[in-house]
Amino acid sequence: MKIKLNGEETTLEKDSVTISELLKLKDVKMPEMVSVEYNSDILDRDQFDTTQVKEGDQVEFLYFMGGG
View 1 (spheres, one colour):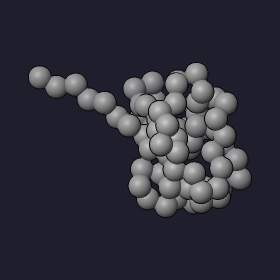
View 2: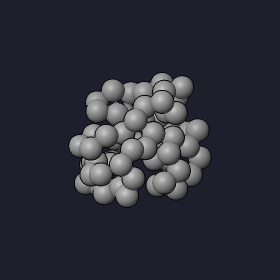
View 3: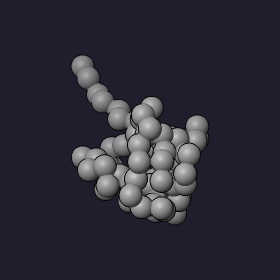
View 4: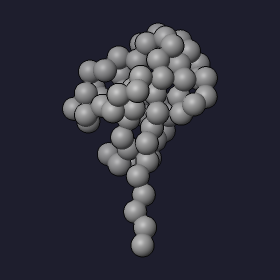
């Protein structure tokens, strides 16, 4: 399955994954600190386990950093 992840076309070996599974597949460190934009919508964290990523979808992992 091909999706666009963080602006780059990415091929996944699975035909279907949830957002939570995608975070694990991509070895995202501290996923609790990542927001996800899915097809231009920001997902609530409780949607990560139920939102299925499909062919052609666009997913952005958004990392927020503090500074001082």
